[in-house]
Amino acid sequence: MADARHSHRLPSLRSYSGLIYAALALMIAPLASASPPASIRKSSRYESLVREIRQISSGEYHSWISRWKQRWGSSIMTLLLEVSQDAEQPEKVRSIALMSATELVKETASPRLHTQAQEALNQSLKSPLWLMRLSAIKGFKQLEPETLADALAQALEDPALVVRAEAARNLCSLANSEQDGNRKWRAPSQQSLKMLAHALHDPRNYSEGKPVWVPQSALCALAGFHAQSELPAISRLLHQGQDPELFRLAALSLKTVKKETPRLPARSSHAPDAPLPSEPQ
Image 1 (cartoon, rainbow, N blue to C red):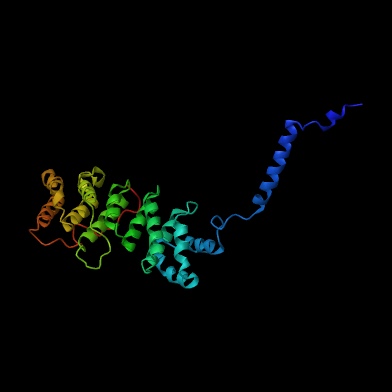
Image 2: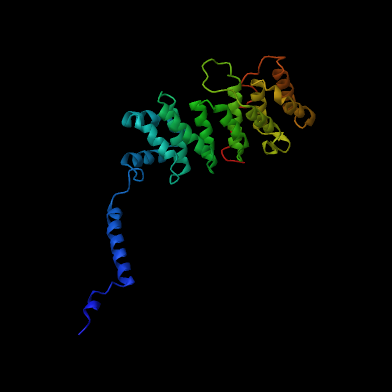
């Protein structure tokens, strides 16, 4: 007859492991069967909005904005911002969503929405997709945050010519509206002025010795901001002599910066209105 002391032997380690796995299975089962959180689920409104954006040509989204606002009210702004940051969506869809959102947000006085929109624009400026970076620049111009001039200046370092050209052209426009008492943005920092000066000589902004959009607009911006600290960079263009038109613009900009002549108009040969390239160079 077996010793009674051995009838109550402790369970083996293998038995304990089995009990632990069983307990974990019971704990995980409810989590696996539960619905994903709302932040992960795509709502029917979200999916409907994406379907409609997919049908829109890039330049035709304006007519849809009033329909969306009428249908979904102020919540459409948050929805559009969410779509713009959804990496699963095509870049065209995200681009249209971002520009539509900023166009709507600029009409509201909600600090929360303005903050959300600016965060989305900042993230889009860092996107690996050139179209998103270009859309962010256009969105910044719509929203006109305090940091507008500095944000545009950062984009002068963008690898895509189309993005640099759009940033420079908007800076030219800003510089020549600087005295507008209703402006929301603050003057560019010294670092931003140096970026404008660098754009004058950046070899990426030249093709066979000819300036391609960016240097002309950068001259316009420096003249409009009366950037006297960057006079040496402007003067260097006079000694290069590669392009007669750029030489003329540089000489005129020098006089403007030195306040020998009135500031240059925003719409001049400094800021050409020729269509920008549709693809990055």
